[in-house]
Structures are given as structure tokens and as C-alpha cells.
Amino acid sequence: MIKRNRLFGNQTRVTFCLPRDTPPGTVSVVGCFNDWQPGRHELVARRDGTRTVTVKLGPGEYRFRYLATGGLWLDDDSADEVDERGGLLRL
Image 1: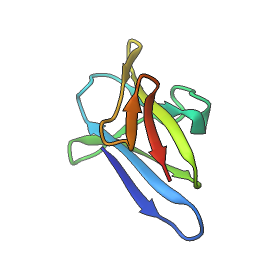
Image 2: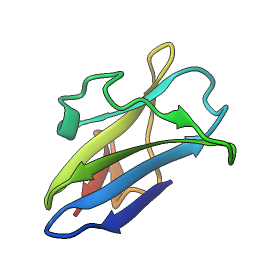
Image 3: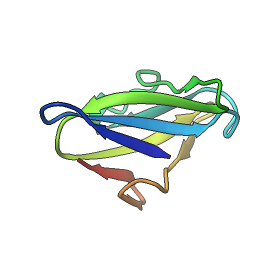
Image 4: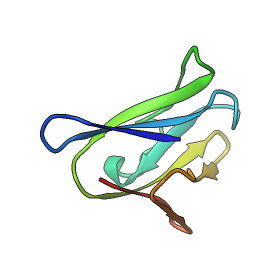
């Protein structure tokens, strides 16, 4: 799930959210906004049974995917578009 909150100016706070245990292990959101570097935006467990990470982004289009332990790649169906290259956010 992806949550978006407009901030002052042209920034948007984007929160990436997955269930706490699915998939098991560490999960990072990687994309063009962080040079596809795993671990830079690692999802953190929350008390409500989810794990999340929040990123501030300016206007534009952003490709992203989730990368889990063991090299498992996941896409997010709540993205604006999903294809063979992953999810696309339009802000």
C-alpha cells in the first residue's frame, strides 16, 4: 500500500507500507529516487502489524520496487502503474 500526503511547496510525503511478516525478513523500497540502493530506505516494523518507510519526493515520475531478503523482488499493486519494470508513481 502507498500513502501520499502533500506537503507545503511541491513536496509529497510518500509512505510505502507492507504487512509485517509478508514477505519474511528485511525489505527495502528501491527506486530511481535512491539510485536503486538496497538498505537506504528499509521498511521498519510498526505496532499496527505493518512495516513502513516514508520518502519525500518532488513532482515527477518515479519507478520503484521492493527488495526482500534473498533477492526477492515485489511490486505494489497500489502504484499508479505496474509493468515488467516495477511500479510507477506520478506525483
